[in-house]
Length: 267
Image (cartoon, rainbow, N blue to C red; front, side, top):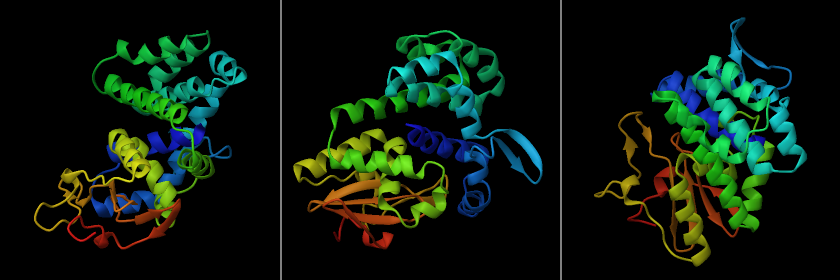
């Protein structure tokens, strides 16, 4: 699913390259996001008239032209096709030369799914950890989709497909499904616990996200932004992001709420 991969890799690219403070993140979201994501009319990242390599769509189109991708796409092996895109985009993000000289060469043949899952292990440092994380996240999402049929899965998948090329900052201000979709990759374990709690009608609170004294959502000291997360209280789901966009889920319907209302001592 191309939307999943764009959402996944776009976030890590911004945080690693373009700063962490609130004012910087806001500027980046407004001015740079769409250029990084790209489109079929914008396969390169162009800022102030200068090219800065391929956009995510540009990387995706190169991957889709390979023998390996075409094979798995023809077989409707969606999970493997998604994995190839995830690895390709993250590899290009970390090392364009490695993407061109190694990954595209690999895709000129017919690597097995296991070959793809282990491909990152040959590297070291940031390339290994970055591509490894993308591999694991893509695999997590594909596996979760297989084992969790139902309206929640369908809604998230539909949102990812519909929103993959849109501006994340703008969309997060109006769409609870989109903010939930981001949580799939920001914290798979928290997302899994959230879905499980909703299904069982139980509360779910990750105490690390909240101030022990006030019950309010804690700030991340590294970014001066909120710690994004999810919780379930009294059979209602809540989700919020680092910018303070917050929503309440009740029977598949999202309602925007002030993030200050998400307080574990008051809900």
